[in-house]
Length: 201
Image: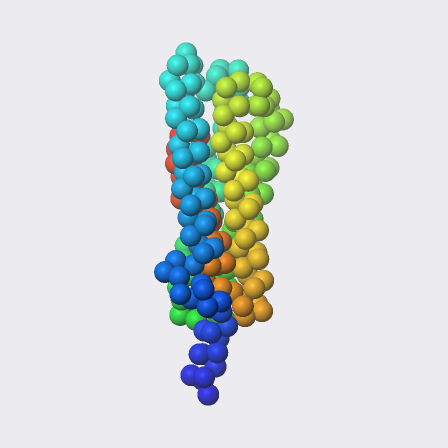
């Protein structure tokens, strides 16, 4: 009876159409991988432009601009990295067909990801109040552009993870849907340390 229930859960969690079963890589995951590759190029271009402007500046950061909150953001970065760890646990449970084993790590991932985004929002409010705006300096322009685009990706990825978690509750989470959601979130997690080192330090 226990083995039969386990097989049922595995079939429900990984329920997909015949075409997706036949595909080597689920269609949703493949599409997201292509998107992530394009976004890697986007961030590489923005980082390159930022480093060129930074190298040409006589003083960096500009003397009349507030300093970025290095220590606080480092702590927030740990929350984001931890969310990636819990998503790995969810990934492993998914491929075991263990729906119950996925629930907690998925919710923890959503909580930590939401905390990261809210903390970044609070940081923006504080920096705007201190005079760092899009037009106040090249630091402000690049900071809000690079970190803002990353934030948009984080919100989108959280939305996908939320949809995946909802489908998990109903027992019909496909490999393509989950693969796309986790690919985008892993991208958000992986690119952030690079942005932190380049922009904040």
